[in-house]
Image 1 (cartoon, rainbow, N blue to C red):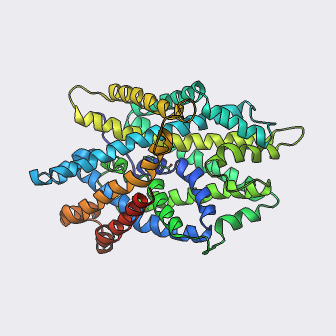
Image 2: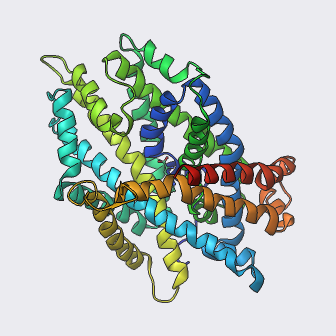
Length: 458
Ligand code: TRP
């Protein structure tokens, strides 16, 4: 672990972790499922899950990472060294595999986002009507070469930051990009919220409608809470290992959780009032960002003069690229750091990054092609992309999370946890009892329910 000495300041650490948490999940997925499952009612359930289960998981991963200063597999190994406990390290391995798969999916969508940023910046989307935009998206995402080229561009930028290192790459980039992201998002919110007819969008997003809140909605809320906080695959174990020893883990986790949640809500405010004001369908699902929004922005363009809609569109896609970039960075970092630890003698940061990026490019190219040219190949009626997506959203993260909470709650000595949370006895840990209760009982029960229903519903 030669060049990875960790983050230098609490702000840097929080910026990097918020960067990991804030991603496509906040800006694209959250607003859409929030509206779908009953607006304010869903939001309430989501907030409970985020603060009681998601945050407990984040603290769990931070404790494991900071105590051991290692990546997931080795963190489990260090905390459970006896031969009888050997199999715990497979929980770390499962996390590693999950990060690998989720990065491949993430890269495909990030490639689309990068393409849309480039296209909106040069005005290629301006002037297309709703149908033409839908057609444009379909022909783009089904084509062979173009999506892969943009995946490669995005991956190259991610790799450059990782090669730069933890401090000079990740920390520095996050400290600049996260504030930029917030400013861009605010600008979009103001524009959207002041459009005539915006009130309907607020209603859609915030008015509690408990009749819409189904069991499925509750499960979706928990899944989204885990996904949005980037927990359940060990990435936060890696970032935890970079946290300064005097960092207050509870405070840092609260900051990350609050920022992540606020940004998700702001994204909803940036999107839905505008969608309603322009008379578009709010339930656009996966196509909301790539098909509905370009139409919304186009309708803001005046007949002549400054194409204000296109400018906001470019800002929006830049925002999405930034959000995706800092998340992809953390996923790739988790893999690179593992490689460094696995083979300390021969590997270097640069070499690992290049090898992993090569593998990632191949895997995400295959996933991208499975949307179009290769869509004849299916597993259980799903394309390869759909299959990996399902694996990643329903099964693997809850399973990894379940392992982590059971491990910390029942296997690891309580003194170790207390020592980490109190920074060797210097901080008060009055909440320790609540935390232990959450990771011993509440989180495992909730995660089991999610897993079992996921398996039953196939
Ligand atoms: N939290 C990210 C988002 O909201 C997605 C994500 C899930 C992630 N797990 C992760 C990002 C692990 C980085 C690392 O889009």
